[in-house]
Amino acid sequence: MRCKGMEDKLVAYLDGRARPAERRAVEEHLAACADCRARAGEFTALWSALDDLPAISPSSAFEASLRARLAAEPARRGFWSWVQLPSPRMAFAATALIALSVWISSVPQPTRNQSAAFQALAPDAEFSMIRDLSELENYEVISKFDALSELPVVPNDSTQHEAGEESR
Amino acid sequence: MKPQLFVSTRVRYNVQVMARTDVQLMLDVKAGDELSFELLLRKYRTPVINFLYRMVRDSAIAEDLAQEVFLRVYRARQEYAPSAKFTTWMFRIATNLALNALRDNRYRQLEVSIDQPVETNESEQPALEVADSAPSAEQQLVARTRTELIRNAINVLPEKQRAAVLLHKYQELDYCEIAKILGCSESALKSLLFRAYETLRVQLQPLVRPQ
Image: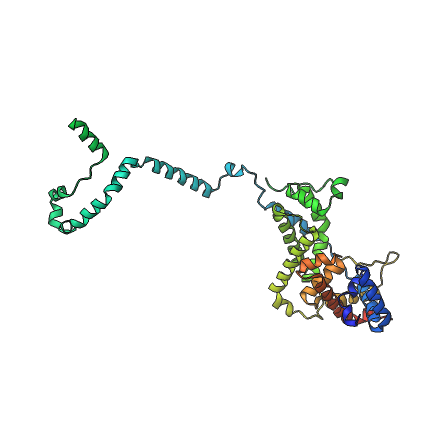
């Protein structure tokens, strides 16, 4: 091993964490290289010197301050906590959902037969609208409501049913 | 319910609780055991504060950052998964906070001369104390000079090298842990440490050269 190869091995060798193979390689090199041997000695002396750097203790304010910051942390919430303490957003969302449900249920929905009849007649009704467009654009015709009677009347199921019963 | 930390200044410890590993303690914190967090805090507050102090060179900032470290650990308790050692996770938080603080104060730090005496904390505890007699004024001066030499030499290391040295020399973490904290390979970490110690060796020649 060359001196360059010591770069990623010397520290681990000196702190005793080198693998056996690395340890043997470093020892062989140190035995042959005076410069690296001197450097290794100075590294050991350096680590001893670094031990002289004093440590500090936490100040008395540290614990009190941390205590205050931890106490200000939001508490852990259980599964049902949202029921006990609903947030304003949750309350608003729930109210809006209920109101929407009530409104939808109060609007009359077309029956299946009515929808089918309307879909079947829809092309005819559209054609009639196009055909009578010039009349609809004429204000005088519109203003006279009699003109509306000329438009085809779409019979619904109930009127057809009643007409059938009358004919009998 | 608010966290029940520090409710009583007298905390009851028992052997079973003390014998738990950090990961077990953290899993207990996750399960809602506040006493386990108290134990982790008492175990690591001094190492974390010292690491941060040596990184940012200001005891007030170091304590503020240490509080932030423990707050983040506490906040993350629900998501905690023991995929790594607890110390790796905690010192990664501490290192990131320290590096961010240094970058935020980069311009202020550049104005501080390395020859300028560094803040000395009143509560500093000498690593080596003479038991039989108090040191003389001359001995105190020598010790203070030596301390400042070492501190200044560490301070001028690049941030990543400094963090590596502090985690290796003073926290005695494994290479694997330090590499994860600094986000590099073990091989790269060993080279990084070699360069850092080589710089310190040159800077501190008066202390390391054989007499």
